[in-house]
Image (spheres, protein in one colour):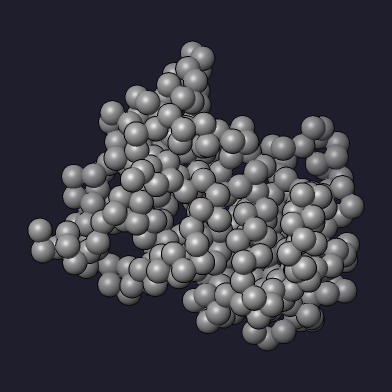
Length: 311
Ligand code: CP
């Protein structure tokens, strides 16, 4: 049965637990997994720029012993000649065993999955969802905080266009006793459909503008970049881009065990002086992204290290 990952909710909480346990084992025993994907091929079809997502998928497949093919920009694929996503994935299905796709249009990965003969992973669709970033975020929190429930998380920055934020809120809404604090300028507030979902589920949240006002309450601070590529005009972007800058001074008001996450890329929203603080976990987060993508590829292909190593 063909299985895709299009939305973080496509996996149950129990399935995610299994995935994270596998990812942690991969992180601790990388050699055991070095040939699990021998003879398998991952296609990375990226119609939008990426460093982490594309390269961590490629690193993941190489670490598993597999091969990688693909394109890193729409202009070097036949999309530039007008080919549809549906036709592209039909063709990619002839060349690869699994595909990770990033596209500027919301829903593109869903269209691809509907026409695909291989598992499709949504590697980001417009301002909508970024499920594998969410898997990365959850694995990082589970590893560094030891749990995925009972905490206060502050999401700060562009909460309107930031797809990583939308996916993470969705995913965390299934865990117990999560208290959300949304920190954004008025223009970049969390979309109404997410607020409605939290209201329906009775999940605790508040919306504030000032980071300093709430930083001392947080177990996790999730910083985000203002998404220039999704703004309608440059003037608004310039006005809002440096609205939040996390500095050492601001961090002095945070708890000693708070962790700072960021999906990256960073622009100005975290000062580089923060990188040496033990609470800064965003580069560790990028490392967890490789382990969780290895676990995801194995899971969607139905592969298991013991069986593959004994074959
Ligand atoms: N976090 C993330 O999606 O980074 P890239 O855009 O570099 O893939």
